[in-house]
Image 1: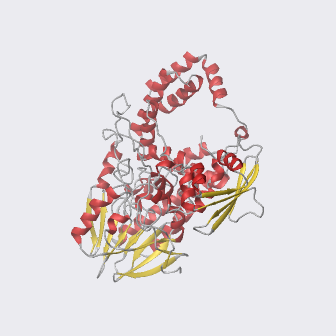
Image 2: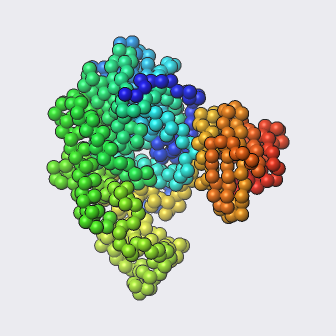
Image 3: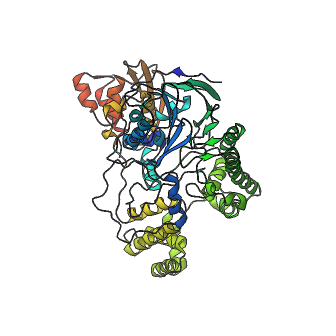
Length: 588
């Protein structure tokens, strides 16, 4: 059993963060840049798959009383927020994605009870579960509980792949789609985060390690159980006296996102199965997920949990079985389908995750990128492949006719692939661009997964002129930078090193941060930057600066030269040498 709630030495419990932090904490999309003055889409709005449209009923807005003292707010944002009423206060599990999403939930909860908020519990680090917490807390000073690893994941402000995750998440969640085309987000009605919304994070104050911890808050007995699944820090909340299970994101009414197309590290799907087994062993009477609607009735809950875990294990086991037969991913994708008794379940429809995406992720998780056919060991550029396809078709115009014929006959995937070859051959080919747009929109109309539909439509908008620009670090307010550890900033440096500027470099720089007592070594060695959590024995350059100022310099909010001139930053080893060091890390 883990520590039942040791306070953390975490800075700045209350306060805003920005779209950057939203991306690194949960990798959900945030439209932090302005939308275009006009939607660039020139064609009629895409139709939607009728089943996906019907799925919106799962997000009918309102607060449901699941059982005495347990209420769940649904449809106010991407995720649910759950209210547990105790004797002298309330507990809130999961806290929405922004201040704007949380305010109507706060009003709805206040209409139920005026008892103070004693605790907020995060089931995991994703931003749609944590960035409305300060609003839900109101004037109270609640404890904030999470698994110990959640704190680390929230602190990853210096995410190494932030720009690409931003773009891909914007596509997955359909953030830039207009109301005439957006249907839903698969697990919620929408993501209430854009350039007009305000994050309101409360940092965790209590964490637990190990498998579980038991707490009594406001007279309510509850257990927090570590249950890796959609995220490695996932927990579920069990109320033994009420037999209420809050599974976080390990169950919702859709085939699960075993792989997210915005981009994720491998999610261990068998960990997910084992977590569901922990849940069903409790024999809950009520299942209250953090997305979509609750299920009540001991038998109905048990059957749902068994079917859900069986669906995940089935996809895993059959993928591995076919891997062991030596089949490549494309063949395995064709063969692995859920059996009818699972495929027919309403909570296993592919509104969010998809079986074929999951198969590919499981293959990669076990064997990596190589499919096993020696052909895949070689490389061919997009340009070379497109030129070969052009010659095979009999010229560019013949290739274009093939693409047009494919689109006209409803072979939209093939038309899209041919259009991509045409675009490589001539990036300014307007006809190829139009074919790509037509194919993307046609595929979107057929797509059941909200993630896939949103991705298709957003890329169509990009082909028509929409630009997805990641938010600038310079827009990060100082008070936000203050809440994140300097170590995360330092350890993100290597991926920003320009190898051309550093090809002949052999420089070791020591950093001292007097305000935190931390020291770091940055050793730039011919195109590679090595970071060590210690001051080097004999550095070429020594930099002494407070951590907050260095964060602002790294975010390009402050000038290193100006800080030097004011004496706020000191350098030993030569200012010119320090200037050369800094230039090696300047962004493109």
